[in-house]
Image (tube, rainbow, N blue to C red; front, side):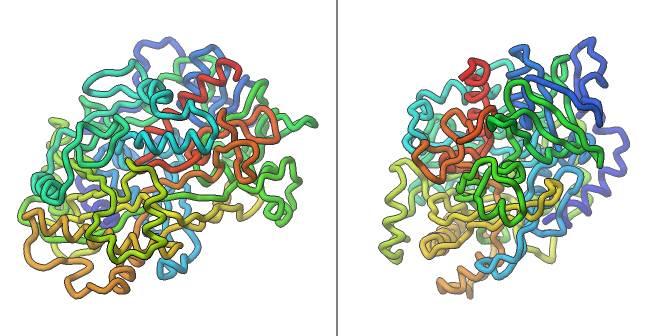
Length: 590
């Protein structure tokens, strides 16, 4: 998919000159602050109240009159990757698992070792190297988990404040929803204006298979199907990220300094195991940023545990193997990696789809012109109009083993086992520019776990990531059943022309279906729980319910790595809500 989209869109964009200048980077709204004053001085040691790596927390602290240093290994995606990072229709670029698809100015370029359970494939796993992090590179999908999933989180963490009814104010605080408008500052959440022609057939299929339409995806209920909301501005229809919503606001504050292209190499502790600052490196220049109060990490599921281990916090064996002095042995750092992925079947269809835009330069040029002049058309939509969620249908559970049935039954009653995500483009290569769709499935109830560990003592070197995909017999059984469900959706849609394109009608046995899944499975980039939240008596817990690292002082982790569990579906809303909740605790001194 990467090569197809890139080849067409680069040619079209090259002819556009300054046509996309209106997308902009910052609008300072008359601020009198000199833009250059927003950036830290490279090579100069400096002291701040807080050293942070996340923009939502940074904004709230700066708003509360604290001085903040914001560290980021990359720059600004609007400048470094242009419209490819801003236009919703290009978002699938970041889901490409091909190691050749790395966009080095905005992506850390993590590629896994060969994965034995995935036919020894090496998976490119996008991780944002840019202000905005994952919110600058995700598929823009925004919805909340289920009530039962947050109740489960609260039980694991030993803190009822994580129940949805108690957490909901922070979910609402972090977004501006259109309609209605919940707040004045936060990520824009809205409905894409373009309705893909295949969507009527998908809604028909969902209904015929027993899914009821539900009123949105943000009330704590997911079972059924609903229109998908996305983090995009409702007027210009460009990506809304933590950089556009929180970072650009933080530019106003003289007390906030941005350190771009700066890698946090090591957290420094005093004799009382209090974090006192961070050793950083900017394009080869090394210096120190001191923290009067706290260091707050939001570097993601892979780089947050990496930095902890490089700083002497983690499994003793890992630290010893790298000759890193132990500050605090925490065996859970980098462990318990939870993730989701997608796979599915591909069909030629009787309506226009986005595959025709990708495969035809003339159609691509027309779509670009429509977006440029009217902010409308297929490029305003990152994928699906409808998303479905369901428990494993009874028709597919009969052939599951008892252990798989027990695994599914262990999840809350409102927790969907499957996410149904039909998209208007092929996910395997085709030789023509015909209209194709893919009926993608994501398995949300899993028991496979894995880990991330360090590859060297240098934070510039990517950590080693082992993916948990299909690691258990139970997960493999559910995946095969899920692909059979994808076929049922396609058959009920009234859209399909001819035979199934992939995996193909000849692929029918469980073994052959699993082989197809293993060779085509791709990331949704929901890696989480690698610094898992839990009570003090949980030997694998890394942070408490206030996101404080056990055994040290002045150090928190506020990102997806600190999740107690990975709720069903896209975690973006929960990441924002966690940041809002912990920022509130920090400001209150808790």
